[in-house]
Amino acid sequence: MRHNVMGRKLGRSKDHRKALFRNLATELFRHNRIKTTEAKAKAVQPVVDKLITLARRGDLHARRLAAKEVTDPAVLQKLFGEIAARVGSRSGGYTRIYKLGARRGDAAEMAVIELVDQE
Image 1 (tube, rainbow, N blue to C red):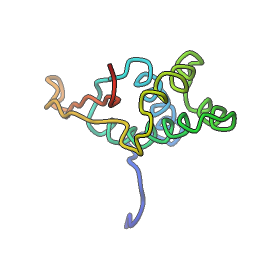
Image 2 (cartoon, helix red, strand yellow; image 1 turned 90 degrees about the horizontal axis):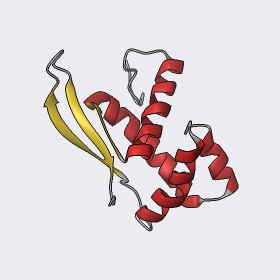
Image 3 (cartoon, one colour; image 1 turned 45 degrees about the vertical axis):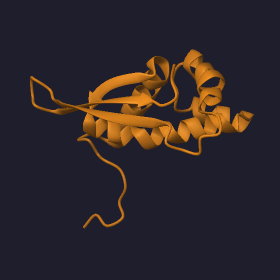
């Protein structure tokens, strides 16, 4: 039984899943919006929210913790500069997910995950 076991496995090993979340989070911060499957969007949402919370803290330790997850230094700079300032005093809920329907090829449920308070 999986009582109180959090997270989705997504048919991947732990390392592959962690790399997937890093890449999705980095691309979300780079483009402010990405289109992916609904399961991946729901799985990466808590990771992104935690990274934005670290960026709101803004100290050196938070920057180093976020640098372990965000793979591009320019995107890390954008996260701590532009995105952290944009969310301001919002106490959570930095992302939203829109469902798009089934993908034509394999009928996978697609979704758009985006940052709130974007221009």
